[in-house]
Amino acid sequence: MMDYTTTAEESCSLLSFRIRSPRSRKHAVREDRIKQLISLQREERYLDKLNRELGFEPLDPPIQRGFERTYALREDVARSVEGPFYQGILNRINTKQYHPYRHFKQKKNRKGRKIYVPIEQSLQQPEPCSFRKLAFTEKEAACFELYPFYAKGRVTPDWYYRFREAWRFVLKVRPHMIDKRKVESVWIESREQEIENYLRGGRLRCKLARLKSWRGTRYHSKETGKYPRQRFKFRYKPGEEQ
Image 1 (tube, rainbow, N blue to C red):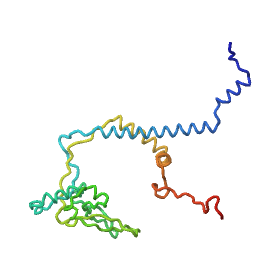
Image 2: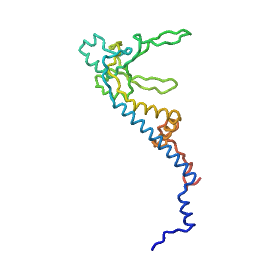
Image 3: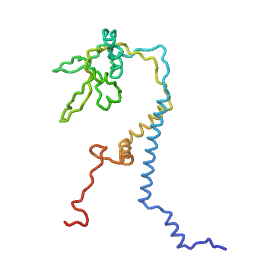
Image 4: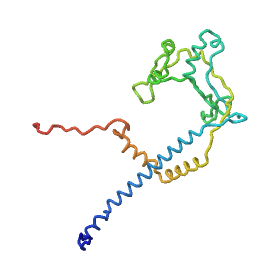
């Protein structure tokens, strides 16, 4: 028959294995805190996905909210034989702007006086990488020219594609009508606001960003954030003569 009784020395040794050191307890608390923040971030992303999947519902009757300005073909170009050709180009490089008033002007200070200046609007000028994604044909690509743009304080230019014959398009202003609205969920919005208040009130967004840079990025650089750091190079290899 086996004896399951233990002596006092053995019971003390077993008890010592169950007690965690202060450093281990502090590490466990820190790990639980990190897991809690990561779970909140995952829940926030899941709620955002649910909110986007709710979709829209028709708005009857439609309402007007400001004005919309966009490019359109000139009347003579639209009536010509090449009208569909230029319309296909415009559909890929067109831009839109919205403003509460039809004049599309913004207030600025000039020499102590407040004046209204027209808001500039231009066609898209894609970079070479974005230009290839637009999948222009050879005939359509011939209508563009590559030009350099020098940003302030930089020596090397950035290259963009610009449409040669911009005179074929004119700006048109029309009322911005809204005929649908987003389906809202009170529970999702309240939970998202609760998580946002908790993370912002405790200033935990920066900590989540640091956790992402430490754990989710294999190569991280303080300067650029995407290039690997330069490792220390020995002046001589072991075994070589100095």
